[in-house]
Amino acid sequence: MVEPMDHTKKRNWVETILRHIPGFRGYLEKEYRRDSDNLQREWLAHRLELAKCSVDNLMGLLAEGGQVDQLATLEQVRGRIDHIVARIRGAMEGYSGFFDLVQIDEEVLDRVYQFDLSLAERVEQLAEAVERLPRCPTDLSCAIGEVRQSLDELHRLWDMRHELLAGLR
Image 1: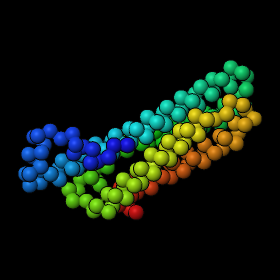
Image 2: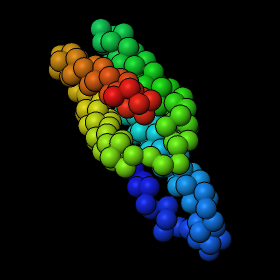
Image 3: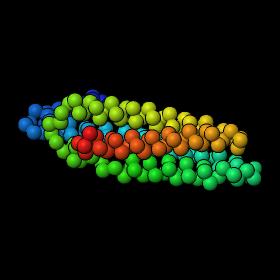
Image 4: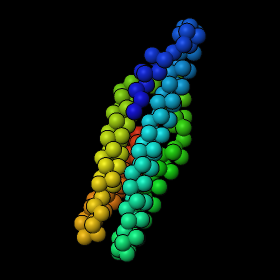
C-alpha cells in the first residue's frame, strides 16, 4: 500500500513552488490522498483477483477428476470474490465527498489510513487462505466454510470503510 507521504518525495520543482500559492497546497494534498486511495483500492482488487485464479484452478482440477460435489460452493466463493472486487473498484474514486475538504481532521485521516492498513492485511490473509484451499474434496468443505466467513467479514469491513469515509462513524 502506498503511503500518502510517498507522493511528497516524487514532487517535481513546479509542484514544490506551487505549494506556496495560497489554496494550492490543499489542492495538491487532496490529489495525493485521491491517488493513494486509488492505488490502495487497485492493490486490494488485484490481490483478490490473483486469489480467484486459485479457485478457478481448483475447480478445473475437481471437474477433471469427476469430483463435482464442491463445484457449486466454489462457484459461490468465486462469485463473492468477484462481488467484493467490483465493490472495491467501483467505489467513487477518492471518495470525493470525504477528500474534497481541503482541511481534514488529521485524527479522522489517521483512522482511515489505519483502517486501510488493516483492510490490506485482511485481504492478504483471505487471499492466502483461498490459495491454500486443499485439493482433496474431503478436506475442502471445512476450508471453504472458513473462506466464506472471511469473505463475509471483508464485505462488512468494506461497508465500515465506506461509512467511515462518508462521516457516519
